[in-house]
Amino acid sequence: MPDLEKLLTAYEIDVRFPDVSGLEHLDMLRLRSELATFIADLSPEQSMRLQEADKVLLRQRSAFARSIQKIADLADWRRQEKIPSTHWWWYLDVVKELPNSLFDSISSIAA
Image 1: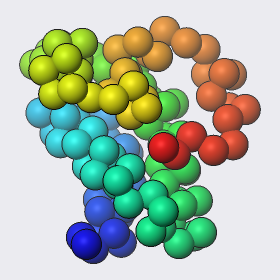
Image 2 (image 1 turned 90 degrees about the vertical axis):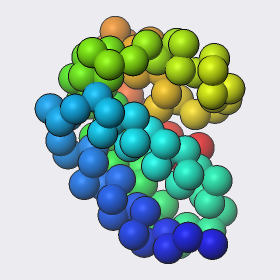
Image 3 (image 1 turned 60 degrees about the horizontal axis):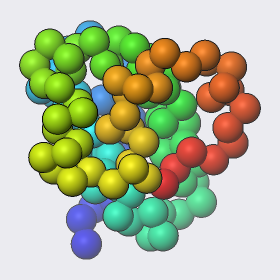
Image 4 (image 1 turned 180 degrees about the vertical axis):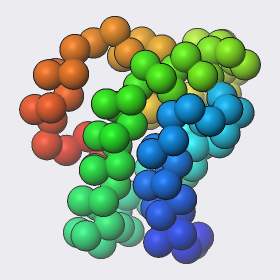
């Protein structure tokens, strides 16, 4: 099993920088998918940190989507990589248009 603490910390850092390259954001989305496979192994504190990092990602979803769109088409990426619909972070191009108030009320968005 990977070091979940390192993965989580890397994700927490990644979501704070929406202005870096789209390539780095794709790596962040891959990292988030890896974290999703270990949700059951997270401690309650780690789970809360993941939820907070997810909220940061969602608040900045438009900036992340714009950066990624410069180098990749997320819809094509999802099809090619067979990304499951439960991995919502791969749908930033879709959710970027939704109002922030929708996400403010979500208490648990970790998948």
